[in-house]
Amino acid sequence: MTITTLSSRELNQDVTRAKKAAQNGPVFITDRGKPAHVLLSIEEYQRLTHQRRNIADALAMADVADVDFEPQRVTIETRSAGF
Image (tube, rainbow, N blue to C red; front, side, top):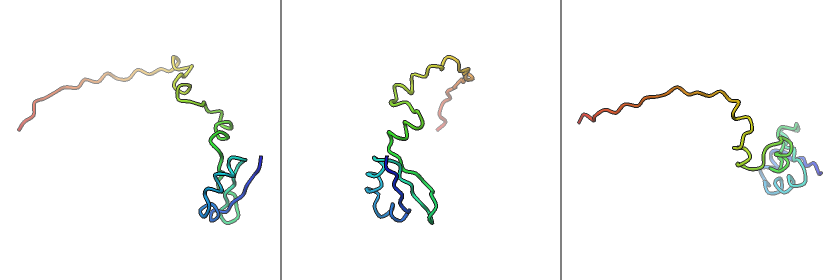
């Protein structure tokens, strides 16, 4: 894994370079010499956060039966338009 450090100015001048560098490891972006942000590939972000990989997995929530949700019933009445 390669760690790259870029200033905010360098990032603004060459975003493509930062995106390519993020494929090999984190890219630290500095403001006034201090680390302010980190750019990661989506794969690395998902690995770090243990996110599910696709929408089907996210929608197949295992504990959804344990959620108490009973919305209040709403009655919608119609009325004639007064022209």
